[in-house]
Image (cartoon, rainbow, N blue to C red; front, side, top):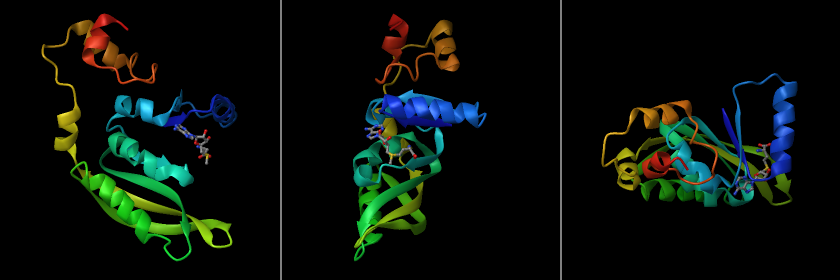
Amino acid sequence: MVAIDKNPVATLYLEKNARLNRISNMRIICSDAADVAHDLAHIADHVIMNLPHSADEFLDCALTIVKPGGIIHYYDIREEDDLFDGAEATIKDAASARDMTVRVLDRRIVRSYSPHQYNVVLDVEVCGGLNAEMDRTKILEVEPEDDEIEAIREGEKQFVTGEYVDWKTLKAGN
Ligand SMILES: C[S@@+](CC[C@H](N)C(=O)[O-])C[C@H]1O[C@@H](n2cnc3c(N)ncnc32)[C@H](O)[C@@H]1O
C-alpha cells in the first residue's frame, strides 16, 4: 500500500494511525502526487483519489500509477443535476488522451455535501495504454549494470526524491 499526501502533518498522523492499527505494509510519501507519479508507474491495483474538489487535475497521475486492468476510485463533488455523467466524461477524456479506455464499474453518492451538491465516487476499470506509456518511458541505451539493477530492486531510488528518477540519475548515484 502506498499513501501520498503533500501535507507533512497529514503524513505524520497517518504514520501514527498506521502504528496504532499495526499496519506494516504501507509506504508513506510526503510529496505532491504529481511529482512522484512517474516513480510509481503501473504499480497499483487500486488508486483511491480522495481529493474531490480537484480530482480531475490528478487523473493523469492516477492513470500513470494504475496497472492495466486496475481500478481508479474517483471521488468528486457534483451538482445535483449532473451527479455522474460529467465526471464520467472527464475520466474518459483523460484516458483516451493516453490511448486508454475505461469501464465504469459503479457510481455512487457518498454523502450530501451542500444543499445542491453531493460527494460522489465512480469506480472505473482502466484498460490499455501501455503503448502510449512506452512512448513517454525513457528507454535504456545500454544494459544496466548489476548494482543499478540491485538499486532498482531494493527500491532505494524510487520514492525518495519526489522527482522522476531515470537510469542516468541512478547511474550517477543521485
Ligand atoms: C480530503 S483529504 C483526504 C485525506 C486522506 N487521504 C483520506 O483519505 O482520509 C485530501 C488530502 O489531499 C492532500 N493533497 C492536496 N493536494 C495534494 C497534492 N497535490 N499531492 C498530494 N496530496 C495532496 C491534502 O493535504 C489532504 O490531506
